[in-house]
Image (cartoon, rainbow, N blue to C red; front, side, top):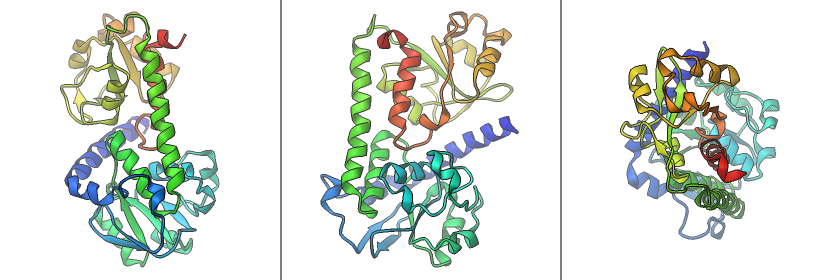
Length: 318
């Protein structure tokens, strides 16, 4: 079941990228906050065009919010609106307080439950599918479809947008500033690392044998590796491709990062017979990182950059 879940999530990521790409640059422009600081305009009512192309009117500052994907939940909490969250999905696990919130379903939403919680703002996302979003709107709910970000630039835009529609523009600016500062600080440390001219090659594995999946270009992980001056072993591939074990071994990475499991999974990688000559395995540079901070597009992605840097270039943090 665990492997099935990992593969399912990988395919969801691919679908999300496709859907996000289809929305086009114009949708992103329509969703972006007013030029300058988001705190400059938090007046209600406001009408904003969402990622589905629909103009959504928000009559007053939302007091009862239901985010329908974990990334949006994390953004809402980072904006200081946890007390206004009246429901979350079965997939939400951060922050800890969400465990006490009413659940409204997983990939299949319980619309009756959502209606019973009487939200004045429902934050959806494209990966929920047009049919479910249509059903939500047909039920009379005020639904805003947030663009699913596939880069830090788009993530900052999503934070600005949610901050704008919830009247928390200043806090949104603070969240983004904090993220950028954290990334800048780690980059400054990396610039002073021993042998800064040596760029390490990193293999990222989101599912292991018999079906190996990795992250190629056009993904958050690829951008994160670029930010820490590391080379994505699968940079010639796109999205979240399935890769043969033979192909993976040929990359011969300096570091292997698993986005699943723990110590037992690291041991499994090191025990793979075909991998015993891979540099990362020979030197025991196989690590795991919490998937939530490297693949869930929310404020914790900045911490994901920090943790990734510490795994790839530990000498920079001694």
